[in-house]
Length: 486
Image 1 (spheres, rainbow, N blue to C red):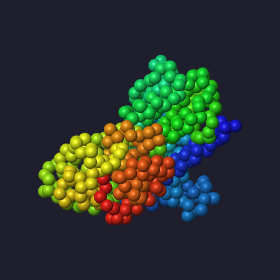
Image 2 (image 1 turned 45 degrees about the vertical axis):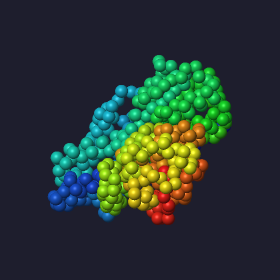
Image 3 (image 1 turned 90 degrees about the vertical axis):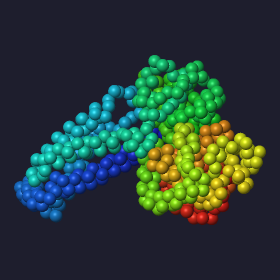
Image 4 (image 1 turned 30 degrees about the vertical axis):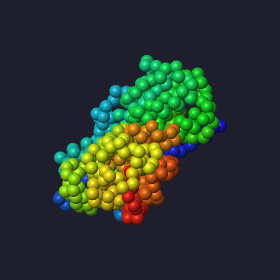
């Protein structure tokens, strides 16, 4: 019963995604086709429109008089052609979305591009010939035959777009349990194109597997967990909940069906007389990651002129007050444990971070938060940069690079991972941010438990709407803030 319900839910989700992608593709290609036709295929040859309309009306009078004259328009014909073309394309073997649970092939982008190019070119040229779109530029027409297939390839595989936006799925890493080197499952596209960190053999103690996952999670960037259960047909309820809450991609392999205790969405396939179960609870992956990165990039572009003025003035202040460099880099932990260099406008004396051990007796807080009242490391007069978060402006460069987001948990130092339990380590499964729920609610707090509360709340409720809400509230929270200790 549970399996039937899950299959039904998965099918609904898949169909919904399928329809959404189709509508998005239809809208995008129709717009581009009409725009390119008006701008380049006809261009300055204004009489070309009259010639084509005359041909269309002649054909209407001869072959399909039931069509009203007001519908005999170039844009309508182009839109109908794109719709019919996409229906044909979707029903063919030339075009299907990438399935990570299929066995890997050696096809490259050129192998994907050529069939789509051929079917598009044949269809479009036939359409122009049949409906006598004769007054078009042949040079621009040749260029256009390459443009649409390129867009179709990009839409077919969101990995390409994610890579352009800063997250390359091919560079993802995974750990596995009981997965032999010669196993056919090593050839799954999901694993073949990823990097394996380590495999643990003969590991069927679920508590031990959990410990090893946590250990590797704190010291390495891990995106996928693979567990070959072999003859086992169930996993303990506690371990099942643990895997679901990991917010990573989980691949379970078993000789038979697995009886799950809770209801959740997963995909199931049968390969090589075994059943594989794919759980994707990666919060910001695929289309979700693309939408979040698009929001980040648009926002940075819109506020860039204003931020640049503030940054230049603040940068000059630091240079005059304490010399070069005014901009520093700190190693922080980002998405799925990947370390990166976070930029920051220097508000403390040079090498002040390395004085933490010397000043640790003055630290008023426990855990990863470090705060000293009247901290002697501050540059004289620079506290206002910290008070109004001006020192964090350079992190918009990290946002553009895809290492951070506008909204997310604040990135901490690698050595701070030791303070994270199995619940709080989930903060690594979303992009770290410049602002977040903590900053708009209790940005002045130095209580790590409060950090924990808001970070977990953000992870459990993440959406683009929540990000927009936090962005809009951040300016108001800054101007009522006091100096932060982090």
